[in-house]
Length: 204
DNA sequence: GTATCGATTAGC
DNA sequence: CTAATCGATACA
Image 1 (cartoon, rainbow, N blue to C red):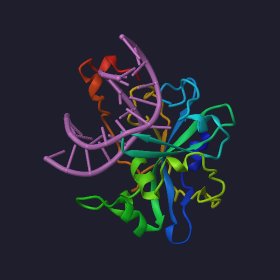
Image 2 (cartoon, rainbow, N blue to C red):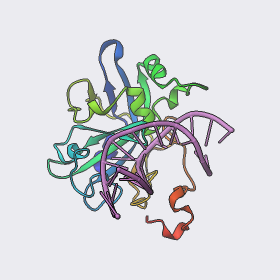
Image 3 (cartoon, rainbow, N blue to C red):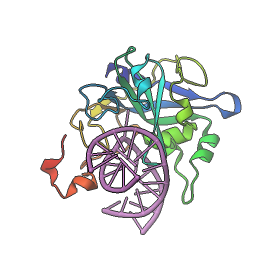
């Protein structure tokens, strides 16, 4: 948890030279292993989650919904699973490349939205499964040593997003009022498979 | 082998 | 609100 908070305001860099992009971390979510039913690792190690049980300071990238990649940083020592999901960056460097990677049909996203949302963030950085396991203290993907710069913004703790289980924990952290972070969500919607069961049936 | 769901997103 | 789209998972 403290690692998640300490990442806010730090700079994440991906690539070198002409392919270098960088952004300031403005929104994260913390996941643990055992005891956190929302975590991919809560049932123990699998081929997919092995890096979550490995040493800290490495990337855990997963593929979801058949089309999106999401970037985590492993935070706990070998054998103990925990990771921080990076949910939003403020784009700082390599904006043209980020725009190109994020271009789809329709209206292009605003610059502040280029790396907003975990799937969008991974796409803007050009990340895929081959990046899972990378050492983020060296190499082409790294968290810079620059001091965290939060511009006086407070850290807000809110419930995690998009979960059916473990959603009560306020393990989502963001810089209050930052334009690159997600807009506030007032009424979390209930996933469609459980909607007919009613609000009570949703485990939180 | 089949069925279901997901740490999401864009678009209506 | 739903479609998109496929790997992981649960189960027969």
